[in-house]
Amino acid sequence: MAELLIKNGFVFDPILGIKGDIADVAIKNGRITDKVSDKAEIVDASGKTVMAGGVDIHTHVAGPKVNVGREMRPEDKFFRGEYRGGVLKQGKRMEMGFSVPSTWKTGYAYARMGYTFANEAAMPPLFAPHVHEEFRDTPIIDQTAMPVFGNNWFCFEYIKNDETENNAAYIAWLLSATKGFGIKIVNPGGTEAWAWGKNCSSIHDEVPHFEITPAEIVTGLIKANEYLGLPHSVHIHGNNMGNPGNYKDTLDTLRLTSGINTSNKFGREQVLHNTHLQFHAYKGSSWSDFESGAKEVMDYVNQNKNITVDIGQVTLDETTTMTSDGPFEYHLNQLTHFKWANLDVEIETGSGVVPHIYDKDVRTSGIQWAIGLEIALFAKDMMRVYITTDHPNAGPFTRYPGIIAWLMSEKARQATLDTMKWKDKVIDASNIASMDRELGLYEIAQMTRAGPAKALGLLDIYGSLKEGSDGNVAVYNLNADELPSDPALIEDAFRNTAYTVKEGVIVVRDGKIVAEPPKHTLWTKVNMPENAQVMHDIREKFSTSYSINLENYPVFDENIHNARAIELDAN
Image (cartoon, rainbow, N blue to C red):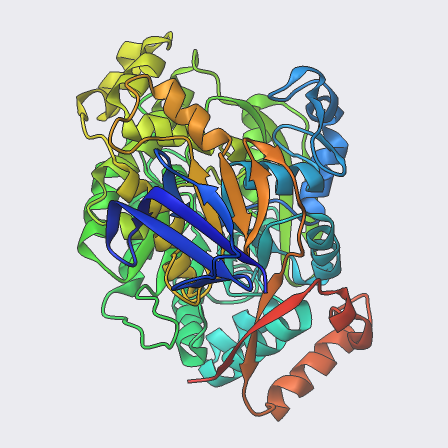
């Protein structure tokens, strides 16, 4: 019967339409409630900002590629970090790592920023047990994992033969087998082509040996997603990522959603989420004439409510890129000649890992920085545009407070721009210098709480302080009536909360970890009749093409940490 009352804070909740009103937040038995008894613990939030716990819609914090990043970059673990020596002990365990933090630092750092949920956005199905082992080892925050489907042989064959029901049945089976959350696509068709030393640079290139195009893959997976009525839409990392001129490919991909709407019980409105849009909004024919395509892409997003995006903001740091887009990582290695790791996952996906430096004194890095901010500043509906860094690809998630400061303060953006060696070139190739828009705390709550929770279909649990939601709350040292003129103080406030509350338990007090209550792994359980044809296909493929037996493939129930199934009946 634990009770907590957070009193007199400036509350921001876009779902409830609360825009900084002074109000109380009551929590009982881990859930938001309308009232508590006089025995409740009191948190005085007077003069402070109160929001629901943060929701990260796209990050890479668990799984084999993350571990490869840790192994290939010992310097990231021991010699880098926000604190001297790169090692800190604040909770039960040591924290270490900067761009590829340890599991313990991952949970602690998110909690200190007021986040209580993170979506691991690319899980190789074959390695799902590894992902869930790392989830178990990550404290405080709840997590989901999205299996990758965009280069899966089963999906290719069902889509090619226009077998939507079979494709949907296979997806439902794989979500159960991996305890996954939704459909992730990475470089559709291109990662499979990479197994043959090729790529799909546009959505109309044919995948070698499969007679299917990325456009058909994306459309087929959207159909299957809506057939099932999954909580989240298809979540796509599109073709030709990170190359000048790719904004046209991005628009071609987004146009595939034209005329497609959704009817689902989870409240999401979009049928496609385009992740780390910054990497997909480039104009130019080469790096010599590279410039921003953010306005063209955001003009389309603003006009189409069935699309959501996250920004993938470059933070101007040394970092570690890692993605299931194997061709991209090889291309990056050829540009920088840094270390490179590559992996092909049998009949499912692949990946690559390459360290990278986004240097403020390099013209392209400055333009990439500008493009990410432009995406947010051009947005008209902040419930459909979310703050991410594609952690760790454009920078570590621990830089979210700095991104918030850039978005809330033109002064902060100008100060960063003034440090750039190629400032004039960055200005010429982008719109950032002419953009004086400054976001407010309500819009930040939309981008980091309510919006991503709604897009994920998890609004009954996260993203709001409405009655019945999980009691996840962040209290920041920001007086909403007197915001500091120094953007560094805004950044400091979002880096270390005054309080972070996880299901009614105070886990952070004054930026320090003080408790580690149980956390949850969420997955999607689809109830539908067994499909005899699909089960036959699965057994046959495992007997001929997989290196492990079918019986050893699924994640065992006991390997899922405090499982929380999101259950539905197929549409």
